[in-house]
Length: 129
Image 1 (tube, rainbow, N blue to C red):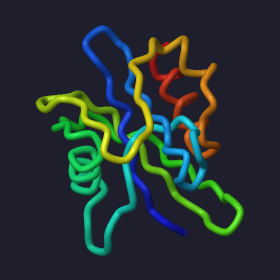
Image 2 (cartoon, rainbow, N blue to C red; image 1 turned 90 degrees about the horizontal axis):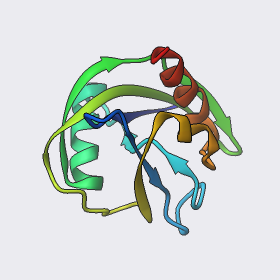
Image 3 (cartoon, helix red, strand yellow; image 1 turned 90 degrees about the vertical axis):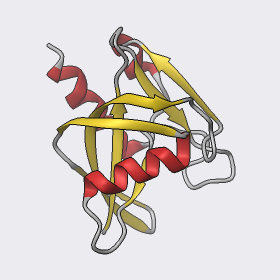
Image 4 (cartoon, rainbow, N blue to C red; image 1 turned 180 degrees about the horizontal axis):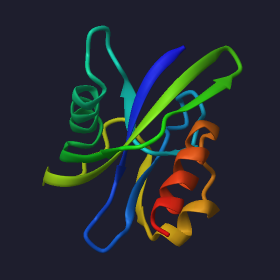
C-alpha cells in the first residue's frame, strides 16, 4: 500500500483548488486534490508542504487532517490522506498537472475524479454542512 497525502486547498471565498492529471500520467486527465507519495521517514504534513511546493509552487498552511481513504486500483493500492489547507504564498505554476481550477463546493461532485479522491471530496462537502 502506497501512502499518499493530498491538499484540499480552500480560498477565502470557499472555492477549492482541483488539479487535472496530465495525459501521460497514471489516471490520465482525472481530477484530483494535489499531493504526492510520502517518502520513508517523512511525516504526512511535511510531505504535503513539499509536494505542493514542487507541483504548484505554492506555500500552504495545514489546518485540519481529515479521514484517509484506502483504494485499490488495478496493480496498486493507496491510502490517501487529505488535509484542509490555505495558501500562504507563491503563485500557481503547474509543474506536473495539465490544468487546475478553483471550484465552488457545489461544483465538486460534477468533476471526473480519480476514484480514490471521491470519498475525500464527499467527506469534505459533508464537513461544510
